[in-house]
Structure formats: C-alpha cells, structure tokens
Amino acid sequence: MAHPKRKISKQRRDKRRTHYKAVAPTLASCQNCGATVKYHRVCNECGHYRGKLAVEKEVEG
Image (cartoon, rainbow, N blue to C red; front, side, top):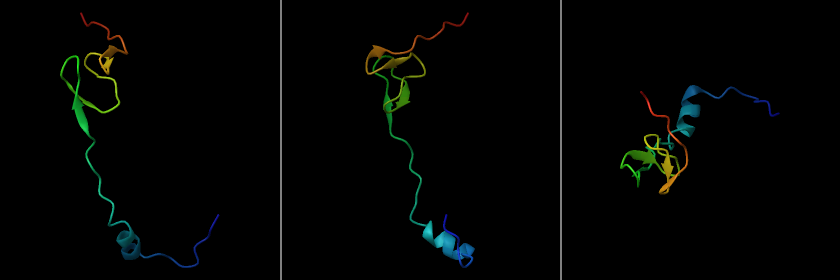
C-alpha cells in the first residue's frame, strides 16, 4: 500500500473535493397506486414493480 511522503493539508484536500455535488435521486410514480418511488425499486406502499406484484404486503389490523 502506498505511503504518503508528505502530509496533505486540509486546504489541498478540500480543493480536490470541490467538484463533487450530491444530487437528489430521480423519482417516479407507481403505476399501480400512484405513490412516489425511486426508479428500479419496488413500491413501498403496494409492493408492485413495473405493473406486477413483486412483494406481498401484510394487512394491518
């Protein structure tokens, strides 16, 4: 593993990291119930993915 010869200052380290910006994930609406979900994920509300039932949700009661 590489071993640094000199300490990298906080200013130099932070300058290297300036170009990174966090972005919000892209959201879509569920085809079944209309809830907001992340792309390529099963809906938390109804358990559907791309119009088909992927996960059966338990009924509270």
